[in-house]
Image (cartoon, rainbow, N blue to C red; front, side, top):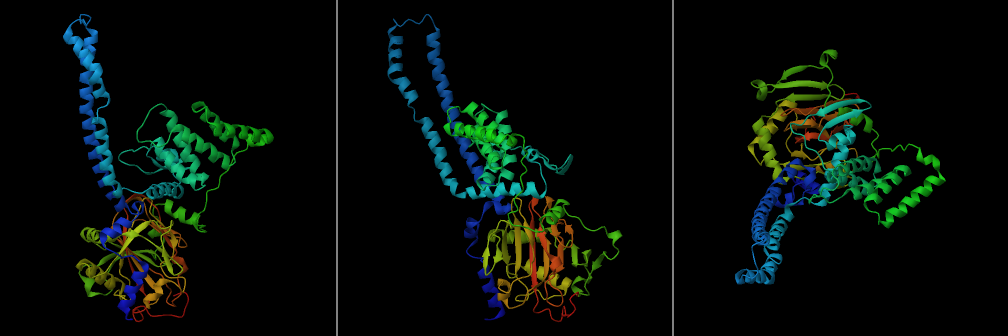
Length: 544
């Protein structure tokens, strides 16, 4: 099998370019890429059109009912209307025998609602699934954790970090968008169903507060009620060890639904527990945040993300500098690239304005029809995971001339061979709601990694291009380097993954911080060891 065939086989294993664009898009998860979320606006516009037609039909029907009501009412209000008049007597009998029957059994209302339901069923296949609701809810919890956001503030549409008495605005939207009690309940319930009471309680508390403020108002779209929120919050507090709160909330529930025997039994149970252990009434419950992926570097990672991109101050470290880079390449002589050395160990460089707006837009457009859920290596398998939320696509340079130009520019700047099989095809990634990629290495750390199936060695270097800007979040954090790089539109980030000895550089452990607000697109060019022997010669010294 030749190198090109091996590369094609690897991409088949990765399953990142199977099927046609329509099929790929249909299989995708809406929440895992913002471009998919944006596409969900189209079916909602269709639903709005259906609802508008339904409302117009109902308004016409109600106008006609109002006319009939006032016609009959006027006859009853006129004291000079004797039933002795045979015409009036006839119309009275006719009304009671047939007119009222026609009004009550009119098919117009059912025809209007049937048309609305039929239209919804035609659109339904294009709507997000419940798994998308769960994914979007988990994204809000992720943002809450990583950026230490206040749930009450989020419910008001405010992105604030609260640490003790200090409140920091991380992002100020042009228009505040508040969540409803039902919105908060659904987020809390996702956590509740996972047994995650650390996240469930603040969201359910906010739901209870909002439902209390609007109690008695009926909203067609709501799935939950104050009673639902109280019920779930009470049990969440009980599971967290706060029996007193569980008791008080259950008693409040019975004020609204006194016939509920299950909650009544819970009240008796909580009262008995408190009577047996009075200390529980005053004990303060401390809940620990679950560390689902068991990240040892979680605190460092999140601290770097919270800076929203922090680079070393250059005048304090003279060895970090900016320059115009040609890499002694004729290709760059007339148009050198602005180079900024971000860090030395690991060596990380940012190339400003590496692509133009038009090139970035073209690359995004080429990739969008092929996007599907990003996966990670798990042994010899490739699996979607919660710690990487995005969609990705692979683009051959034969797809469009702009990709050939891009490869030439990368090769000229790095001095490396970026043609397959010595480099992978361009991977384009679009992050989802709160999209992120927790700390990881780009190079293979296991001999069984699918990367080795290319028979071109490990990933020696990463060239990552920011194809968009974001309003907040989304920085690239280098954990052991203890710095993060913000998203800089059209810039490219370059670093070596391997020492010259071929050993992996542990300091390149990095992460894509959750996108707080914005639509983050990046393109990755991973360059392999083979083919670079004379371009980046080996060394036996571990420090090289």
